[in-house]
Image 1 (cartoon, rainbow, N blue to C red):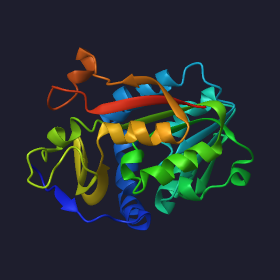
Image 2 (cartoon, helix red, strand yellow; image 1 turned 180 degrees about the vertical axis):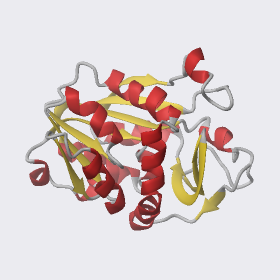
Image 3 (tube, helix red, strand yellow; image 1 turned 120 degrees about the vertical axis):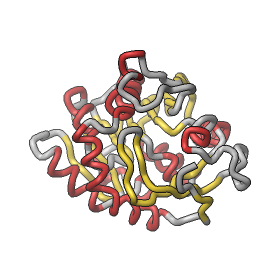
Length: 252
């Protein structure tokens, strides 16, 4: 197990500060292709689940350094990235400066209003975001408030059943799959390690499903993507289980 610790619950402001510190390293990993999982697994899966959705007014929740926004912008009418990390938004604005249909709002989705979006969104994503939302019920309520009826919401999260094994804390005495647990560790991807510590929240899969069901979302697709053999060869170690879970909801 690398340096993974059970953390006390943190407010969103503390988590945002961690992402401010990570922003440049995260942009480097994404721009250089070091984050194979983003480019070969996470982003393609999200784009596949968005097929057929109305992307005329697209909302990218937790848009980070803007790399997913650049992928969806050719498919969308307009793209609004919502991101609390000011350092990440600064990078995203530079990355997307030539994309005239993308703009960013520096804020947590919980604090964004429909007026700021210039109307309800027609579809939204949260790519590797919900595990960093300290209050999942408040997050789900905010997404509900910003989406039109019958709109699509796609989320990708670290797979709660397997991520603890992948990161090496499944056998820690403090770990309990059934509980919400704040976990702190240096941020890493398969081919790159940083010294910057970030926090994610482990939650059982049932908590995600029940929370969004209670906030007016109907689950219509659930995927556990596994890279094909040629992509697996790019990783330092083969996958023995899915590392991510992708969910597609319709707001009723």
